[in-house]
Image 1 (tube, helix red, strand yellow):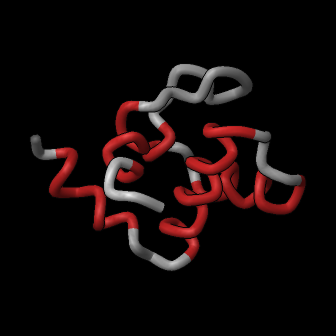
Image 2: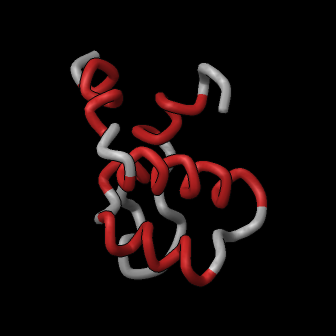
Image 3: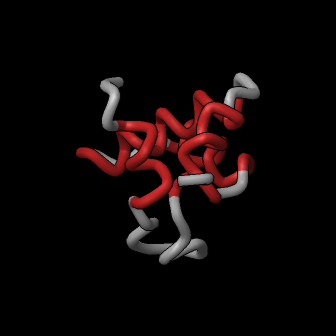
Length: 70
């Protein structure tokens, strides 16, 4: 993870599936957990989904709150 990853979770939109168009930071935890079990997609999307899963799983989503207020 680098310092640019957290803001990307708020701006990067899910490109497909049930939650298409939703910001990665707003994806439900059970959907992130499903990806963790099945495997994250390759590339940048998979990296960001894995990061969001870690934040959600460890109760650290509040790290995104200051970025949401901007």
